[in-house]
Length: 442
Image 1 (cartoon, rainbow, N blue to C red):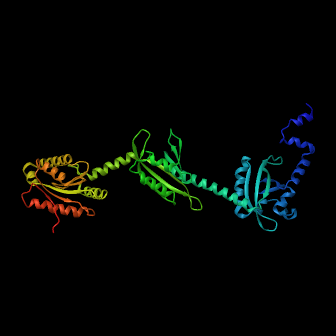
Image 2: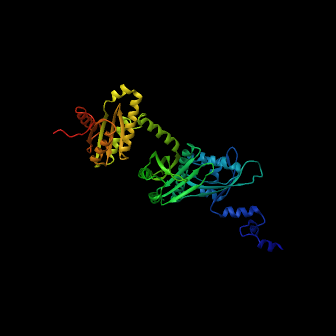
Image 3: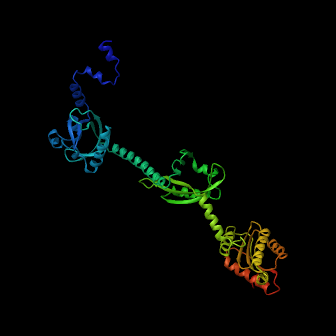
């Protein structure tokens, strides 16, 4: 194969084709560097950044004459704006030891003292003189402010992504294992990232606001609060946590705790809601058991007075307009039972009474032990005749005095108790072992 055929087989971008220009590399470089409207320079990186070669277009680009630039040759960084020089220097000394390209947009001083924007691309080349890194740099003037704005927009987007990542890792630091999530309001997209030893999956759900309406992901009793917390966080910067029942892969629901936080851009627009989900089922069950034990009377396993009052008030208020009756029941001659048969026998009578009340009054009722031998009962959506009939059924086994009052809307438990207590004493003043319905005095 002759030289002509060899040349023809070279790739179109192979620099060997430039031999057509000259046999001298110096001639070729002179033609190229003098002919392109881009500042080209060769710079050596030592204690300073020293210019080794600069083409004519370099001086045109920066607005300096060769003579005026002579004092800058040993340290070209002195022509860069002081707010940019340190960050540019960091790029140089971070990337140069690894012989990596450097691309940077910065502000520099022109020959007349004005500031200009310049884009610099530096490529490492072999240094045959010493061990200092050597870079061939191409300098482009950016006179068009719109291009600067484009660069700033790009930088803003990068910062936004970095901000999201930073928030994610802050949350991740709080636990070695867990489930992270990101919700993007503009895209209506939820992304779950699993962080468990044997599970590093990522799940993406599009049209999440519609998906959550029919998904069993969150228990129906908690879904409204869950959606409100999420979508409120999409409207303004917000940070919080909430507990809710969430479905699990094996079936059923478990208690979870979610920490969440809004992430906004520099304009204050919410771009993401991020958070961490933690399984708290075991601790929640332990706490509920402790709360249950604190609320329950140890002897009868009915609600203690304070817990009963609180639950009864809530029970009535959550169903306004329902027919509700409150009853206070006092066992007859209980002191005589204790004195004659002993306290253990008396305790057994109290337990039996509680058992009978549970049999007679269904799940629409709340039962409590007020103290001593007194019991309290609240029924909802049960007619008075049925309440009265149940108490009469109890009278066949236990002697007691009972006062009943209808719970009207807006009344509180203390005033209701007072009325029922007065009705009960009407029975005590007669022959005992009776039931009396409170009636307002005219």
